[in-house]
Each structure stands twice: as C-alpha cells, then as structure tokens.
Length: 530
Image 1 (spheres, rainbow, N blue to C red):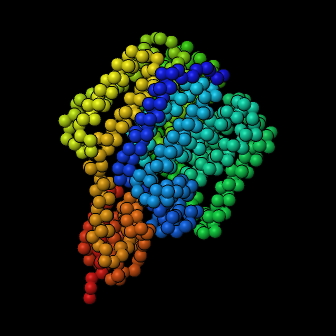
Image 2: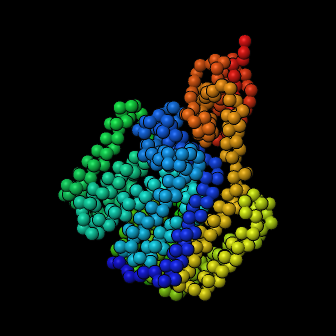
Image 3: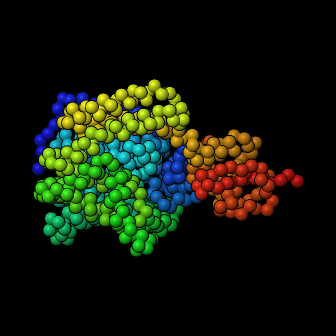
C-alpha cells in the first residue's frame, strides 16, 4: 500500500526553511499573554505539587482538585523546575514540545502508507492549520499531550490489525489508553473502544474479541495501571471522591447535559465550525464530491479506515453541543490523511484547479492585511516598528508569485506562508492584544496588591479563591501556595470575593482589585485595630 515519493532537492530546501521558521513561529513571545483560567489551573496545580512534594493528589489553593488526573501537571512542574521560573513561558513550553513530537509521530505513522513526501506534508498541515497555529500551540493546555497519546491509540488500532500483529492490536492501545486516562480521564475509554470496535467491525472479525487472550491482557494492563494509581492516591486521600468530578468533566458539554434541539442544531453546524477552525486545508476535503476520487479513496484500505476511524471517534462530539475544537485534535490527522490522498489523486479538473487557485491566493491574505493595517495604531505596540512589516509584505508577495510559477511546490509554499504569518502575528498582534487583554489588567491588579501590602501575609477568606489566574499570580509572587482561613485576626490581610462569600462583620475594606472571571471585583480587608 505505501506509495513512492520522496521530497526532491527543492522540497528539502523548503522543508528546511519551514523547520527554521517554525522556531520563531512557535516560541517568540510565547509567554507574552497572561494565563487564561484553564492554563492557570494546570500551572497552579503544578506549582503546589512542587511546594508540597505530593505529585499524586492535585490541589488548588490547598484544596483537593478532582477534575483532572495529575499526569500533565508533572510536565509543567518539570518545566518550572528546569527553567527556574513559574510563568506563562515555562508553562507553555511543554505544549510546543508535545506539538513537535505529535507532528513527528504523524509523519512516522503515515509514512508507512502514504510515502515520505505526503506524510511530511500531512504533519505540516497539522502544524499550520488555523486552530493549531493561532490558538492551541501557545496555550498551556493538556490537549496537545493528550492528542499525541489518543492519536496513537486510534492509529495503532488500525496499523497492528493491518499488519496481523493481533496481540499488539489489543495490548499497546490499552496501555496508551491508561496513560490517556491519567492525562484527562474517561474520554480515553471512548477512543479505545471506538477504535478497536470499528476496526474489528469493518474487518468482520468481532469474534476476535472473545477468541484472543490478548484482549484480557490489554484490559488487565489498562485497569492495572489505573488501579495502581488509585491505590497510591488512596494512601493520601479517598480516591472515590475523584470519580464523580471526572465523570462530570467528561459529560459536561455532551448531549447528556443539553436538550435535543441544541443537539440537532449542533449536528448541522458542527462540520462547518471545523472547516473554519482547521482552515485552510479542510476546504480541500470538498474533493470528496468527485465520484472518481471518492471511489479511489474508499478502495484504498488505509484512507478508508482513516475515514471510518475519524467518523467513529468524532460521533460523540458531533452530537454534543459546546465542545471545544481542541477536544478533537487527535482526529484531525486522520481527516488530513484522507485529504492529502485525495489532493494528490485528483486530476486537473475544474474543482482541483479552483482549489489550487485558492491555495495560491493565501499569501495575499496577510499581504492585504499589512497594507490595510500599516498605519494602524496597534502596530506601534510592537517592539520592532514598521520596517519589518515591509519585509513581511515583500516575502508574501514573493510567495504569491512563486506559488503561481512553481505549482509543484504549492503546498510547501502555503505552509511557509502560514508560518511567516504566525511570526508577524507574534511580533505585532500579540503585543497589542496583551496590552488590551482583561487578563493583563487582572494580573497587574493582583501583583499591585501583593507588592503594596507587604507588612503582613495575605489570606483567602473561606471560599474567596478568586479566579484561578489571580490565585496563581499571587501564589507565585509570594513563592508559596495561597492559604485559606475562616478565622479573623489582625495578623493578616484578607481577600474577600463576594461572588462566593458575604463580607463578614468585623472586617473593613482597604482596597479592591479586578478579577477577569465574570468581570468582577474582589476586596482586600483587615480587622480594624481596637
């Protein structure tokens, strides 16, 4: 089934440029924006793990945190340790490293079936699709690491069966599922069950479920790893308290929590949402409307199963309103594998020519943006002035001309265009966005409180845990986790968040500060002197 096709000399040169451009694209100004709430949760848990030395039971402001297992926090804690800093950059470095690793895994897995050049392009498609390049690659989320593990579960379910390595078919995805569970919880079981089940169903081999002892071995390893973790967890805290919150997290945005009308509406809008989120390559999927391409794609065992596994695993999200695009990152390489196959299989018909012209015009999008926004006030917030914008404009013009002249290298040029766009985004858009960001305002406010009131410790009164970002900034600035108290005395300042508690009698307000979550105000209070 593998197809021949290695990059030629010019394609290798373009690949080198792409890899070089990916470094400033992914790392420059990575730590500029303030934490959002999910990032702050991961980082605060990691910070408290390092302080307590307990890497088994996650805590937030000293209270047990039940909504995610602890594994990904270990990577953030390691990054904090290696960099010696607890900040946005050190929290986000693992995301970028896992993205690189996932792209490499995509390449190595698909090379077996698509050949070298197509599999490289497939991994670059993933790297530079809209959702990855302009959102998930610079957030300290679990999802990049989780997508790596989950993608391997799905892909290897097909690969090991295809190679008739039936013991590995049951065992390796099961072990990876256990790792996935320790990253994110119950959704890992869905990927495992749907992937194994889809392959066996369409291979007409469901009897293997009860004929093969490897399934029992795989499940024993899966639940043994998870059970071993909970056995260790139970040495510190009652593990049963985690199960309800984990299930709540797994079902919160699914059809279980929404009415049928919301689910029906989502079924119709969800495909178009994903075309937008994973633009521009998703538009090439419309090649499937050509009968000959669809026939060839279905006749190819690899692309057939990539499509089947994509549909089987996305089905739950397709009927679940309010799911985030990052929840399906592990499925995007499956769809892109089909798209790559169809693009190279397509003959020079009207639709293929239209799509090629669409790709050729991509460099004009940032070029027009530079021209229209050249005198925009926000561009002055960048550290480089306007001179680099002229260089970017020239580069995009050159890429546009090259895309017209050198059609053979069109896809490589599109990837390079998108990476250069991200670099310009890092240099000009991120600084302007950060200045205006409500998160920056909240960060500055809590740091002002910390620096202005140094004569006594600050405590959180009862449930006044603020938002997670402000909690993290206060804790990291103090160098120790925040402490919650219900007692009042004149030794402390008290933070009172009126969203969660009433202002107690016996305290007076001395200051207030902004919290981004729900756009609210919290108060700094003291016990008045007698």
